[in-house]
Length: 73
Image (cartoon, rainbow, N blue to C red; front, side, top):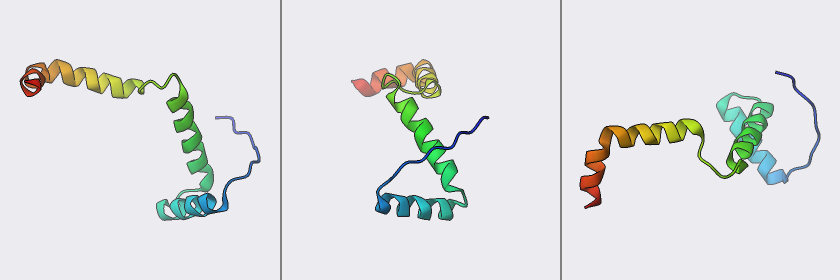
């Protein structure tokens, strides 16, 4: 994976929380920023659920359709 450097500014309280989170998880801030940006991009793509979430949802309906119908009553 090709990486590219960029610079930005962030609220110091938020940065302090991110640093603490990174330390508590034993990860680098870079990894958290990458994860956060990836999550944001996915979230903004048409505001649609991620495909694996939809697959699980649809599989659940196939497996438990009868139960869901009873619960709806």
